[in-house]
Image 1 (cartoon, rainbow, N blue to C red):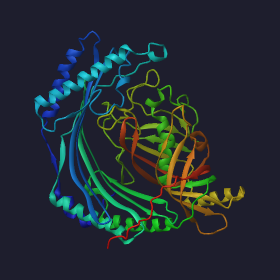
Image 2 (tube, helix red, strand yellow):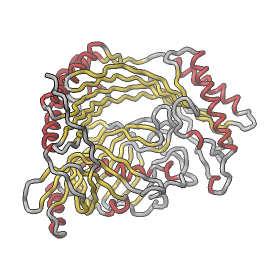
Image 3 (cartoon, helix red, strand yellow):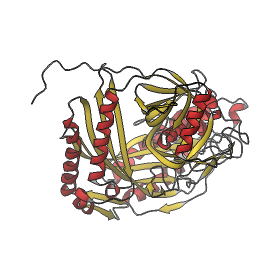
Image 4 (cartoon, rainbow, N blue to C red):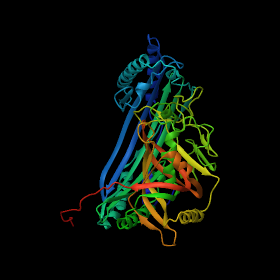
Length: 551
């Protein structure tokens, strides 16, 4: 978000003091232990050829309120260590397969002491490394030696030194009071409407110093931070269904979040939209043309396209591998280009949350051209190669405590076939008339979605629209409808994209996959799709209260 008027946050923004130069003892301890442990493990009968430590030293300030009252207020901190040990050689490995996604306390993941006690840290690092070596050795000895499985499992990376000064933020009591006041003020707006069953606002500010050290010579220490405001509200319709709406704001830190008045205005608008949805008709299943707003289109591309070009997933035999053999072939309309760029910090003045300097395997982040003029050019790659000769392009990511794999960062969709919003609307109406349809759909807002990529379930996607309009061909005003779920299969849906708008919007979110939750963005113009399919949303009912509400 661009910086706005400071308003009620003036004091808060100046009392969240930035502090550089905290103790560097943790870095020195890790460096020494890595050297000592590798010297020992590389001499075993099944020798280690690679080791790395990844440490997330994280802090958080969290505040939440509902209907005018503060419900949560806390500070949090934690240190998480991930140890990777690989045995065999770069040419013959497969010792990393057993390490994937096991979580805290096993296979190389461990909580570290918050203080820099050398004895306590060495004990934790020793235990994590010992566990990881044992599982890596077992996996290597049990590996499948067939020709297919003899592909390289891990590629080399250039030795890198990148050492930022550790930094932290001192969240003062004055800051806490200011944000508490803001949250109670925002959430109290929901109290004015008795039919609301949820009306909450939360603020979360996380920051940390992230370490990556390896026996290849990687010595990385980088700082990251992210601040967000989350608004969630829901209302009960006349038939008992619960209708939710959400809105989020993201920034690099607390003082770049929007001003109080902007958020308050958005809450008022959200509440008004919920009141309209309360009486809106239920949508029937639909198959026909539609327009997606830029924000909705961002989710569309993230879910339907993005997860299918994450290369780690394509190495698995149980994955549908939709695009594995499509390099150099057309997979999208020729007017579309798609990149993923973790080096991009902002776009048109808006902060992007999927930004980082080095990925979680110690590889420099880089812009990746995925699709050019509709032709598939590349995949998002970690150090696990999809094809012989490939190297990582800096997209190995993971939540603290989990094993990195190739993931999205800042996805950007551009188009050479742009038309105004008015022309998109006219195109929608024209197609509907040609097909003798009474209306088409405009999908304005979505709350996320999911996609399935394995071979044992339908290779389909599911997106959750929250604000959808019928666009009538006879000139009647657009009609708000509710209860819409967007479903379909990727190849069919991609073939139906006919044009895009001119204005880009950015969707922000936390993407969940095998390596946990990571912050991502997807920026896209509006798109006109010749045919989509929707189904009725599952009913979520909460009985009306029996007791009289307290005064």
